[in-house]
Length: 228
Image 1 (cartoon, rainbow, N blue to C red):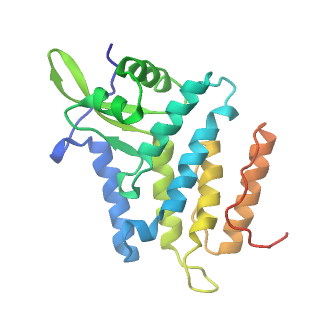
Image 2 (image 1 turned 45 degrees about the horizontal axis):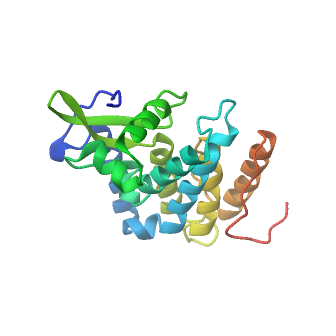
């Protein structure tokens, strides 16, 4: 069984052009900030994105993850897509294609193909899939993107590249991680914030929105002690 695949114009190195464009944007933010990828968007933030993605489907009217097995597979795919900030929400595959990804995720490739097909049909789409060359008449899966993860990696990079208007420091990684987890649950991004108190308030506001949508806001990683 093969997964229906989105059109895949490719650039050098066989990566999708979409990946190249987003990776270039991340690199430009990183270069301007004078930081390494892991310093700009550390692992705590990437874990926040993955955690929010894993919890997000429960906020949808139609839950595309109706079983524990599906939820577990989605969480593992989210972990793969957030393994490195410079991968900007993509899982890049070699010649092994979907079988390679299925092995990494610990499921039969037919099961993965079925799940990817369902997740790419949601609105908004949970995943976008891309192919490389055809082998024996079948298109080889070349990359999988979680669009919300792509948006949030770039959002986090932009937010972390800014320095606070008051103390001249970038926002604390755990504060940005709290924001990205909530934004991932809501499938959204927001503006970059000029001061950490503004971002702190945004985290509380996002938690309230999640509650109104029937979800439960996660526990905060960084307790700032501020009260409005």
